[in-house]
Amino acid sequence: MKRPFFRRCGHAPGALTPEDQAVVDQFRAMLTALRNPEPWTPGTGSAGDIAVRVGPFIERAHTRPGDDHGTDMIAVALVHPDTPHAAAYLRGRQLGYTERGWLRCPTSAILGCWQPGYTMLTHAAADLTLPDDVGMAPAHYALYIEARRRDDTLDGHTLLRLGPYTQTRHAQHDHDRLTAALDGRETTLVPGHRVTARYAPFDVSDHHRFADPHETDAVTLFKAAVTGMSV
Image (cartoon, rainbow, N blue to C red):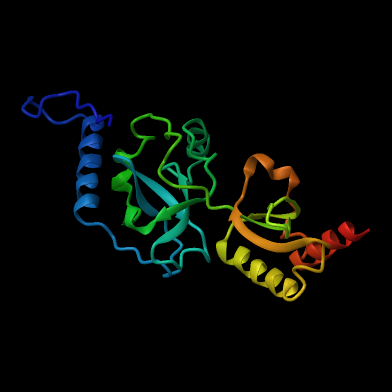
């Protein structure tokens, strides 16, 4: 990790320059933050940011309202430590912060609520780009409604792709509704096939093939897809 560079010896005569004093103050704030983390608890509904470990670094992250109720995993978005200052957005894009989207973060990686003292320990402070692998998988999800042959060959096709869902509870809600709509009809909707709804990560590279579940009701989209198959 790149460390701050002190330009003068601590025993040098005279008062510290304003620049050196600022570095000293930042270092003291960092030590205070590390020694006295502010506790954060999932499900508290707090709008504040959190500090998460990314390798040997510490990063600032937004939590996603409505999706921080789990005890083991929550959804977060890594942000530049100087957020919300205007320059932070541009610099965050250059260093790879703004392209990550929502990520699945284990709560064991959370140090506590974000404190400015952590800034010195971020990739941004070291002028480093975030690594490709930050140890967190994407937190976007999708539903796949598939028709598979019933002759054990597993051949078939996808009737409908729904996504992205940015909150797991929304995806689960639509999955439950689709499962209820399929109840007792799995093997009759498409002759020779079994129709099922599958919950899986959203494939960003294939995004143009997905229907947006936030624009049209999921069950309505499903019924239209099945009708199209029977025409």
